[in-house]
Image (tube, rainbow, N blue to C red; front, side):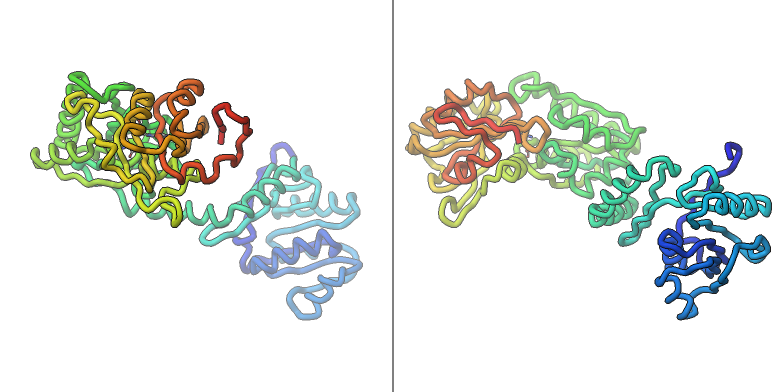
Length: 429
Ligand code: SAH
């Protein structure tokens, strides 16, 4: 057996093949059904036929040879199956088939097989075959059930794979692409396709490794921005370096993906980059992404608008460039009956709490901070505005985190949460 070649045919491929099956009990009947479904021409040898096989024979779907197995019955066969309850007979069938160089499969006896049958899951546009070489039928079954349960998703992934070819990136062009909040499943299909075909990826520090690893292996991966480098002279230098790198790589004929967290046009300098490329005459395209407010709201079940609680949502920066100073946002102009999604606010959370209160936001206005939204380490912390600063500090909230303020922030506060009375409510979702 050891020197034997193993085949992994899928029933798909048995169309028109002449197949001899020895045994017509329950196991034989299953094989026979699968073979018939695959379009094989089946001859069955058995002393007794199970009702299902009997019915097939009566309908003329197969040739039934009643009685003992005889080697000459193999003469016309292209494939042989032994599925009787008699192990000695099964082994005899296997030897005889091998002597004739016919592929043979013996149910539940991998040692007698020259090919084994994968279990098969079929879905829209795909057939998946699973095999453990006959050694771990339980594992194969579990995997089969998993694939069965995820049939729809596999079909969607197939569709994505096909689209990827159609959206192959053009060279000498810059794609300013949103990577979403961090979960790779939240990339757009277009972002994924462009990443796969990129020659170079210039990314933000916020884009996680899991997403970068989806880029083509040949792509150079470049990161200029450092954590926290959103303001000041250093940031301007970095932004210039990014501008220069994009232009240089595109002029070299490369397909450049400028990958930014969230959406490129929301607090992402995507606009400045597009302006620069356009000045330099470099073709570019902007691919949207799920911005942190949208991604984190979904992850924490915070409805941004709500018929009774919020009729607007405002994306606002809690901290901007130094030049604008801390008075960049006039909180008093923002609607108090809506939801505020405050980006880049972690470092100034105490100041923001004071500014909001000073602008007339009631102290009992609920807030939620989502840290690392959509990523495995996601945390959600909730409370009321009066307690924002204390809770943020006690919970040790760190960037990246987004702060939601408004009555919608308290809608599902206790979902997946171990509630404590006045302690900060932190949940690992
Ligand atoms: N262009 C990005 C925003 C970049 S500014 C977008 O559209 O989302 C960086 C800020 O985005 C962070 O300070 C934080 O407030 C927010 N942010 C980005 N990713 C986040 C995440 N996974 N969880 C929480 N906040 C996030």
